[in-house]
Image (cartoon, rainbow, N blue to C red; front, side):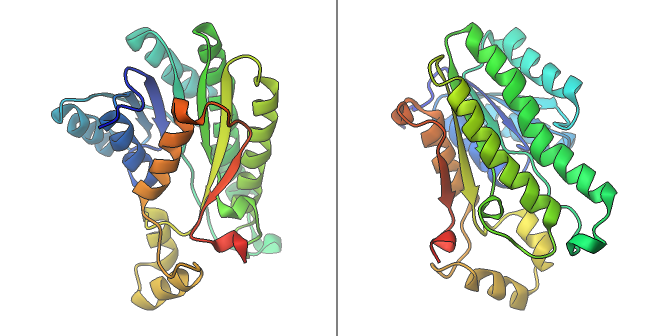
Amino acid sequence: MSQELKDKVAIITGASSGIGRAAAELFASEGAIVVAADVIDDAGQQLADDIAGKGWTASYVHSDVSKESDVQAMVHFALSTYGRLDVLFNNAGIEGAQAPTADATVENWDRVIAINLKGVFLGCKYGIEAMLRTGGGAIVNNASVAGLVGFENIPAYCASKGGVVQLTRTAALEYATRGVRVNCLCPGVIDTPMVSRFTHDAPEARKQFEAMEPVGRFGTPREVAQLALFLASDRSSFITGAVIPVDGGFVAR
């Protein structure tokens, strides 16, 4: 391995499954000390145990990213346990209930915005504060192609991901001269539990989703994690404020 993140402390939210899990495993294999954060404690702890079992370093912390106190505690854990924070992958997110805008509930709107957008804001707020103490770092925010183009029946999800895109650009400009880079990736249709919920794992529905991608297949969590790794590493040292689709060509249409 090239050890792209050797000895760097990296927090990954939503780490127990999908893109978050793939990123945690990949970052650890590249030398990072991983703090895996999630609300699904059994799966999160098992992930940390699995990583440690391979001879790498990882810890699990319970963190509901919509709660300021949880995000503060998550960052404090990294600082108090490992002495610094170098990388933050704001990955946690939910799709919420499906309904057209006029039929969408306020409760669903509030929940999706709280996790997908407020959660990224809180991560950036406290992550940047921690990184500035030790000379800088890299933040990667997970948005979506739904932050770049519209999709019917998921207004809160689209709005939250569009907000992540703009928050990324704003924070990148604010800290461009202070050693903190902030970038954003926008996955397309990735074979994760979220897509399984959308399709109910029905073969015909999966085919319809695959047909949305010009490359004719789902992306894999690891393919997204590879981009997150690049943006977290020193190889992307001149990249900040970038919004990068990893979508099989979806938004090129």
